[in-house]
Length: 213
Length: 92
Image (cartoon, rainbow over all chains, first blue to last red; front, side):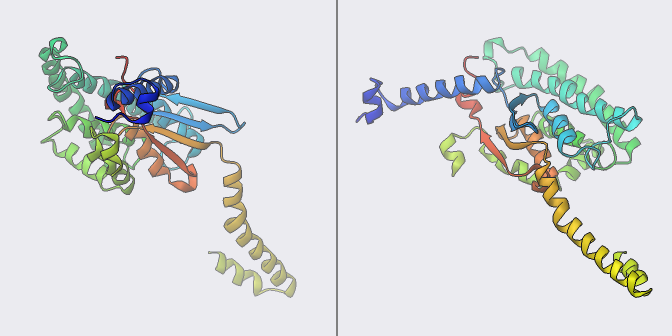
């Protein structure tokens, strides 16, 4: 096997090690952006011309809506109103409660990110029961009371978070066979922005080279 | 609606007609040029870059950016982070 010149210069035996070395650099660089080894992170320049980076999806969603779309169509205007309280409540219910339940399954479920010897199937069972018994009925009740098709009636930034969680839960066989949630997800999937966002879904798990093709 | 006002104003005296004409030109300029220009110049955020991996939590933000649309967000960059290749995870 002919070693590439850069491998030879760096005294690396083959391209795989070169790849690992490159990734370790990427890792260190990315960890400066988000030390939690996770996406999303948002880089931006603020109104004073100062560069900044933030992480946490719910925080980013709220920040963007308030900074770019304040009081417009995607969120009720800030203030002590019932509409704003509902918006905040469902935003964080999706981003914290629903998310952490799904994350438990992501870690402990089949093909989860934890090593098999550290996985506990009881966590998955308990979490699935909780989702079906508590989360699904709450979402259905809210969709009924709001009149749908979205969580607060009309589409709002909340749906970007909760809709994502509902879509995610279906990967674990949850939120299926519930007509209201099926209709909710269908309404989300009809949106052009949703289609653009998930157009790269098929590249999940692919190598960077394959994903570019 | 604007045309209705224009007809109303222009049906009066010549002074009213001239005023209506100037007002109409100003309104056209204001809404078609000045408002978008001011919106662009007064944009609170710029150089948006989203660190993203497909169907993960970053999809929430990407979805929102698409919903807001380029008129509000301006151009934004999506930087793919190879989470499963170790870029985000190691050292785990």
